Length: 219
Image (cartoon, rainbow, N blue to C red; front, side, top):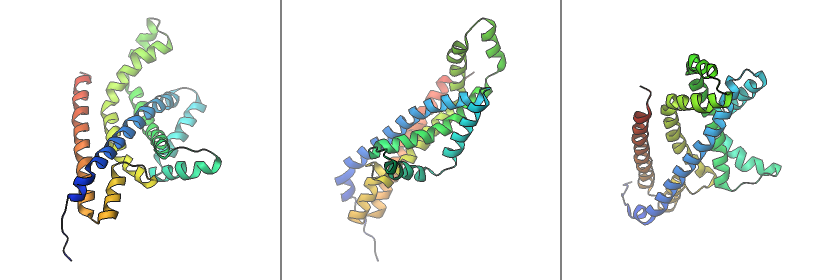
C-alpha cells in the first residue's frame, strides 16, 4: 500500500497548531514560575535545622519525582473531582505540572544553596545582616547564578512535558496533531509537523537561555 504525502491539511490547520504551541509554551513558563516558588520554599525547608521541615521536603520531592507525570495528571483531573475539587482542564494541568516542577526545583535549589561558601554567609552575619537580608541579598542571587543552567533545562523539559496535556484534551500542539491524524489519516505529516515545531521552539529556547547564562555566569 502506497502512502501519499499531502500537507494540505497542515496548511489548513497550521493556525490551530501554532496556537497550541503557544499554549504549551505558556503552560511551561507558568508552571516553572510556580515551581520556582514551591522549590524555594521546600529547598529552604530541606536545608533548615528543623527536622520536621526536612521530612516534609523529603516527602514532597520523593512523591512527585518518583510518580509518572501522566499518573499525576489523571489523579488531578479525574480523581480530585471525586472529592469535590473541580478545576478546568488547562488549570488542572498547570496545577499538576507546577507541583511536579516544584519537586525538581527543590532539589536544584537545595544543591545551589549548599554550594554557597559558608564564609560568605558568615561575613553577612559578621556585619550584622538579618537572616532575611542574608537570604535575599546574598544567598538567592548567588544561588540563582549557580543553578541557572539547570533551570534552563527544566524549562525546556517542562515545555515538552506539556504534550501530555493532550491526554485530558487540553488544546495544545499534540492535541491538534492527534486530531489531524484521526481526521485525515495523514499520520507522518501531522506528527512530523508537531515534532518540527517542538524542535524549533526548544532550540530557540536553548539558544536564548544559553545567552542569558553567559551574561550572568559567575567569573
